Image (cartoon, one colour):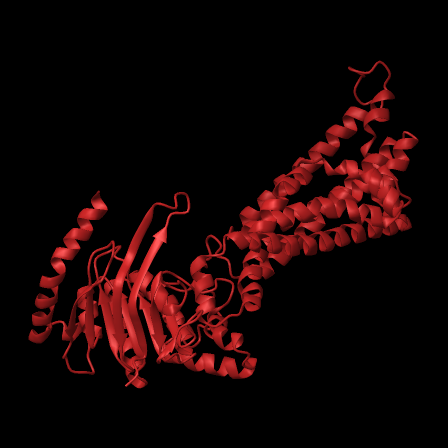
Length: 267
Length: 272
């Protein structure tokens, strides 16, 4: 089966603008393959280049070496098959909720009436029907994230790239959002790359967890299949023995890297 | 929201200050009320400072007789044209330079020089180029408005959040759509923020232009009166211009409220 997304031996080196001799290799020789319909979580210590990897998959950043294949085809320019959920607020502040949700449809030239009908449908699906005329600043952080989710999913992308999307939310809202995400995902199994630094979140959501080393020159150091049954409730699944087993196993592998990353940041 | 009683008291005090100023003006200028203490002749004070009653009756005559409307209309049209043309150019060139780093680097010293130049001295040149009619006043206003709008748009485009931009790209926006749906709205929010300034300067351009040479407009009225030492009419013209500028500013505030609904404003809670 052709993988939905394949990052092949990606290396990404940044060059300092002031001093061309100063370089920083964020990602080195990283290969990551995501099967159709698979939910992959990528965990790693802070500052290890997770976002860099995701930006490369999205086509927002060109790798220094290596190739990105989307459904078997070499990626050129932005990845039109992918939706991207950003870590920070990415809604257009001058558009109200419904106009933000339908923005992608508008870019594709879909008639306003049809786009609005679909937008209302998606607002209902993320539990915000009736909030269509609110502007982003009038919504809470959790609501904005749900709008962003609807904005991305309305285009029905085959691949979903998520960069710590719930990191800024409080723990209760976060678990609600995680469950909502799983529910939406199970309806039409897209391929998901979910980046997080929270191992519990990664295990609770994913089919497979990939652990990255500390930066610089980040590369995968381990891969774990998560054989917890679906559908899952993210709050309840955390209490099962199998979850704890997986957590212990992966944490054991991760711990050294986390400490390494922490030590580097303190320098 | 402040409650109504407080608001009313505030208005009362504001009006009292205005009345107080007019009374002081009246007492100090009309001959025979207070003995002269600065000028040797009691008729010199009204000569230099006018008399409020005569000033007000002049304004009354203007509005009842209808002489003023033509002049006000001319000034208003000049102001609006200067504002619209200056804004269009400012937005277009601001966006262009913000998105073309090379062109921006080349133009940078010239933009700075033009901005630093006291542009009112361009008035004589504009009179030569465009004549003494409205066009030269509009041109003067445009040079004043342009730079305010230009700098704001430039800043606005430069400071578009990179995440919002990346998000729009991922949602499938083409380069043209990015311009229309991301850069332009972001730049316009900066333009609206400077609306009071740019409308005010368009007005300044129009009035100064009229004052320096014209055959109609409120600036022309003031200039004419000054020529014959009719200080009361000069003050009347100034008062009319001030009232007019205040009205213009109120309209701008209304427009601003309408256009910037998406921006957070302090204290939006409702008291029950």
